[in-house]
Amino acid sequence: MTNLEVVKAWINGEAGKAGNLSTDGVNLYSYELQIGDTMLSGNKTVYDYTKGGSHGWKSQTTSKHVRLAQWLTE
Image (cartoon, rainbow, N blue to C red; front, side, top):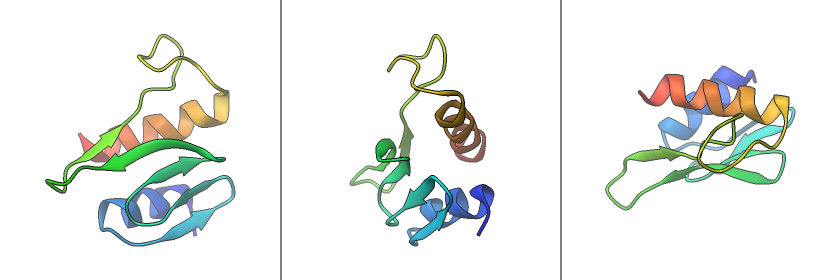
């Protein structure tokens, strides 16, 4: 599975894993850090762990994961 496929699985409420990006269908994780959540309404929320983001920078890889999830949920 690719990172793109993991994020698409999260959007569709399905589980998936590729390297350090994973989802249980409800939450999206970069390593073990939750970077995405599914609200009760079904809307997806992505937590901004990029440089200058609202949740603070964690790592280059996590930033890539966040940007991919942001791009697919916009």
